Length: 229
Image 1 (spheres, one colour):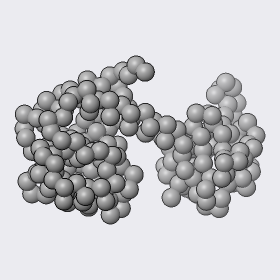
Image 2 (spheres, rainbow, N blue to C red):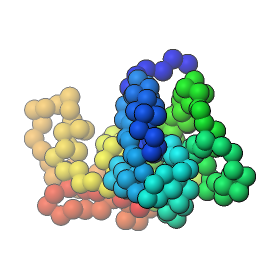
Image 3 (tube, rainbow, N blue to C red):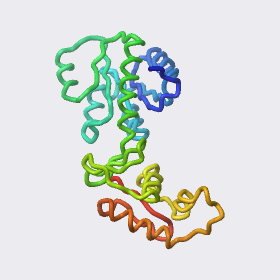
Image 4 (spheres, helix red, strand yellow):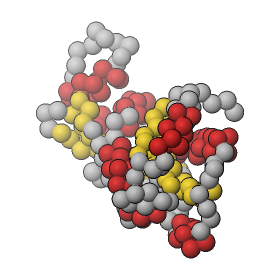
């Protein structure tokens, strides 16, 4: 499989060795769209909270907050982010501790560039496949690629306008989408049509009947919000 430079996956590298951090970052920036850098565990945890990277590569021994302690903080509320730990030596006790933190890999330094790249591309491919599915409430899922709604693996049949509307809402989950934006999206090939608030209200009523309660909320006077949590 050929990979391009703009792999849409974000990576955080937490490494206290300045030269190594620089060389790893420059190398991964050849293949990945976003690469964050941190020189210690506290800085890395701040970047994690602010930017929510898809993959974290963390050294065990870092100042202010070591790698395992930082990962423990992350794992209190997040079991999904892919995390790779690196260490200059194999410490059996720390390795056992790391296993409990659901890590993808425990790599011993020096880490070969090709080994790291292969591992990251494998993770990135899996993440892209995962992100093609948007989890809604009550075991409902929207498949972005197929533009289909499923409930516990069974397709929920939608009419064309319902399907097109839900596809738009799923591009902006938990954000307000205006009624005018929805109307323009539905009738993008008929720009001469006059906006009809009643048409959108009726459509949203029908769509709501096929989704769990409170999935689509009304932002009065503004538009609609697809709630995923």
